[in-house]
Length: 295
Image 1 (cartoon, rainbow, N blue to C red):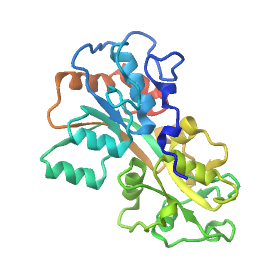
Image 2: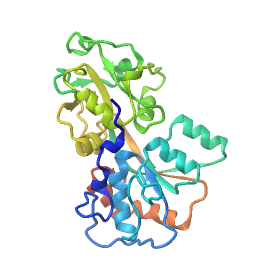
Image 3: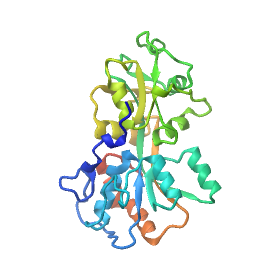
Image 4: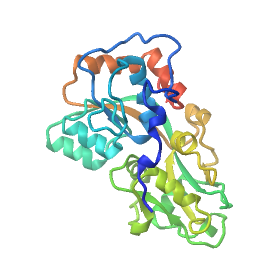
C-alpha cells in the first residue's frame, strides 16, 4: 500500500524548468549566489518553497532535480534531510522542528542546530468526506491518539471504531503530532496504520471502501495544494477551520514554524541566503508559495 512521497510529481516545482509551479519574484533578486552554493535539502511539503528560493537566487545552469543524489536542491524528506545536515552532506535544510532523535544525535556529536523561523503553517487533521464529524477539540485530538477515545460515536459520528493513522518515526508530521500530545502518551498503532509518506496517509483516508472510519494528519498546503484529494475533508479544531486567515490571526490552535535549519558554523553564502529569505523578497516568496510569512 505504501507508494512513498515520490508518487507526488515534485518535478512540477523544479527551479527553472519549463512551466514550473515554483513562485517567481516580480523583479530580480537583490541576492545572487554564483559560487560555493549552499547544498539544500528538506521536507517534501517545503520543496515548492525552497525551489522558489533557488529559482530567485541560484544560477540557472545548476542541477536542482528533487531526487538526484548530486542535486543542489534535493528533497529527501524531513528525517533524511536532518540526517544529511548532521552528516555534513547538506548546508541548510527546510523543515519543521527536529525530532527528539535528531536533537539527541546532534547533542551527542557536539553539533549545534540553528533553527531560523521563516514561515508558518497549519497542522491539520482530516477524515473521509463521508464521515459526518466536522469538528473536534484539541483535547479530543489527544484523546484519540492516546487511545482514550476509540469510537466515532463519542464525537457525534457513527458507531464505528476510529482508525487513527500515524506516520513513521522522525517524520516531520509525526514529530509534530508528538509535540501537540504534550504529556499524553501516544498509542502504538498497528503496523498497517503507519505510513511512510504523507501522500499515502491521505490516499488511505480517502478510500471509501475500507477506510471511511479513518483519521489522519498532514499540513495545510501539502494536502490542499500538492495532493488535492477531493475524497478527504479537513476538520475544524476547537471550532476553527484551518485556513491562511486563521493561521495569520492565531485562531487556529495547531500552527507550526517552518525553519531554515543549519548545523555548526555557517558559510558566508548560507548567512546571506538566510538573511535574504527573511527580507521582503524572501518573505514575498513564502506568501506566494502558499505559506504564512513571519515578517
